[in-house]
Length: 238
Image (tube, rainbow, N blue to C red; front, side, top):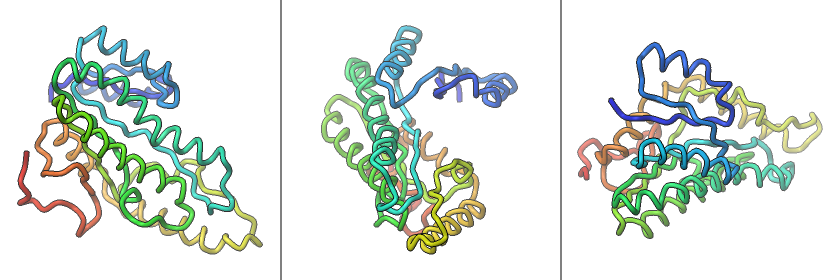
């Protein structure tokens, strides 16, 4: 689309596939090191962007992790790690972007939450769902505090899409005698089947681009991939 894009990851050495796409399609994309769990890393990336381009128009917070485990089988570290990435990561990037956006009098922050952040949690999803509910509340607070500065914030809330989320080692390994194992196994099978049958995440990308263009339907929260919860095509647009 002609946008200047910075794609961030914890370890840019892992970005060979992305680099191949950038080269093949002639895209204006720079890969930057950024670990959302490190304030130092976040500020280093934003300082580089501002020194290079002098402005930041859109920030998309899409880093996310989460254990599949019953509450009784989670540890403090499970919860701290989940919130450090899913919630505090978004807080860190917002804090880094807001001064420049206020100075510009414009900017957009897009937080990728989940339908888990709007509905009651499923078993084994407590830490993940709680963090995503918090991301929804964070987005509301950004709008309440920053709309007067010309800054917009949106919360994109996907359901199931075909991604590699189930390839990560996030599922608790319970003993056969564990009383939680039957329900944990059922939830894992449900998630694996749902992801396997889900469409590619094109609809999520469309919402991210609409947020950047300010062409989303009215409202802060935008479920996607959940029939009956998505905005109608005839909704008023801003």
